[in-house]
Length: 81
Image (cartoon, rainbow, N blue to C red; front, side, top):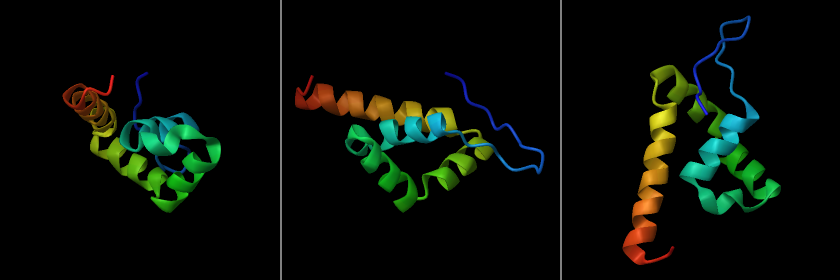
């Protein structure tokens, strides 16, 4: 899945629900267990703004990938497969 900083008619960065879910799943997977937890995390931690800033900085994809790599490393290290 490739994300880019697409702009709307007013020049604002478009942030989709899929991007919000991808962020939560990568950065805070414990909150991705159900819809209510995801929505509370998204609103409580202002995820849309974080995604918007990351897309503008060109770090959205790398942030998600680094979070996934870190989680995989910790799982291997702690034997939590």
